[in-house]
Length: 88
Image (spheres, rainbow, N blue to C red):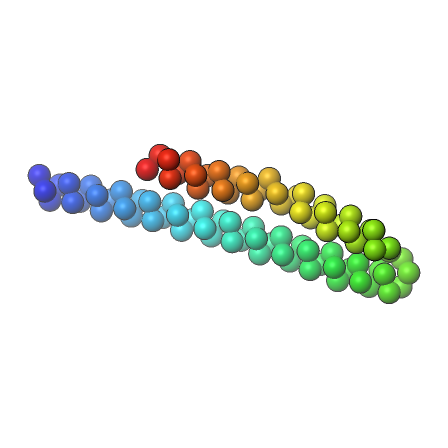
């Protein structure tokens, strides 16, 4: 019985580890993608600002849009992690 319990515990541990690694990878990928989006908006905004095509407000709007685009995805990642912790 002890061996069977140990084997079951090991399977649960490995499954939990995989879930945590995948959720961390998802969250970090989203964070990196959002960061690239912010850098892209800042870079394009700086070019547009220097050429007189954009204003500071346009850049602020672009940054806000990138944040709003990724906010639900980031929350989803956190909720999935919380659900998996509660399940386990």
